[in-house]
Image 1: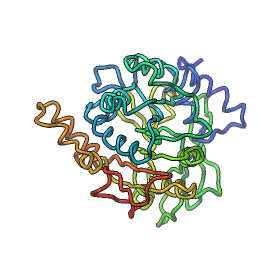
Image 2 (image 1 turned 45 degrees about the vertical axis):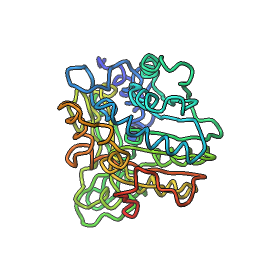
Image 3 (image 1 turned 30 degrees about the vertical axis):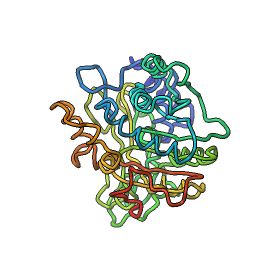
Amino acid sequence: MAANPLLAQLLRNIPDQGGWMGFDQFMAAALYTPGLGYYANDSRKFGSLPGSGSDFVTAPEMSPLFGHTLARQLAEALDVTGTDELWEFGAGSGALARQVLEALGDRVRRYTIVDLSGSLRERQQEALAGFGDRVVWAQALPERLRGVVLGNEVLDAMPVQLLARVGGVWHERGVAVHQGQLAWADRPTALRPPLDIEGPHDYLTEIHPQGEAFVRTLADRLECGAIFLIDYGFGESEYYHPQRHMGTVMCHRAHVADDNPLADPGLKDITAHVNFTGIGVAAQEADLAILGYTTQAHFLLNCGLLDLQGEGDLVQRGQVLKLINEHEMGEFFKVIALGRGTPPDWTPMGFVRGDRTHRL
């Protein structure tokens, strides 16, 4: 029997369900199986240095200035929408919530965290204990909500379907068991990427029904407010460029990346880049307004990151540069803002310069 209990479970379950599992099902199992999936076990995950025992770094872990700067935008959104409640999805270690609450103080009546991970919830509760009952946890959205919604690196962890064009024929790529090991297995499919891929070459990519469904669910519940989603990804034309033929699925463990999600399921993160055009289309179809779309660098600079930094020491300046440099997180990460019940002429401060909505 495999030493990895989730792997052992997958090796049993896949034959029981016909010998094939779609990659989206596999990714969901690898990340979210209770007690065994990556986000459902007790590994550290988030941290700034490899030596910390963590697997990757997020912007709030890199510098508290990320959350303090973002808080300026959130404060404006709360004022414009006349609300006093924040919702955060996938709050990680709780670092971003702590930074936002430090910056906004009593402006936030309630900060609600929605997180599927019990182990991360415990870590968040410890990190945020000083804010008392202003911070609450929920397993799901209420039927109706008013306020500002935040998701930092949430969309990239939502399961994707893999599509592979092999010999000119489109397949859905899934997972099977071969000689006692997990193996790739393709099945012909009617599914297609949203754009035609030029050329005859073999091509691997992803589609994002769960991420788009998440946005539609938010739209269904949001009566009045704004949504800010921050993640790495591209607009559709870049995402499905003919030269991007290897897909974007990546794994992260101990600050080392690899491209084999079938190895060590449950013991490492699995992500895919975000197709922000798909997110925007899903939002518009659900009657949300697109308030802005830009790079993380433009967003943070527009919100006054450099003013908050002040003089800073060398370490702090280095952290800020990683947040905004083009070859670091600045260009790689994007921010999209969606709204309902907001003034039609409102441009959130994070998008006043460098808005790229026209490129979605």
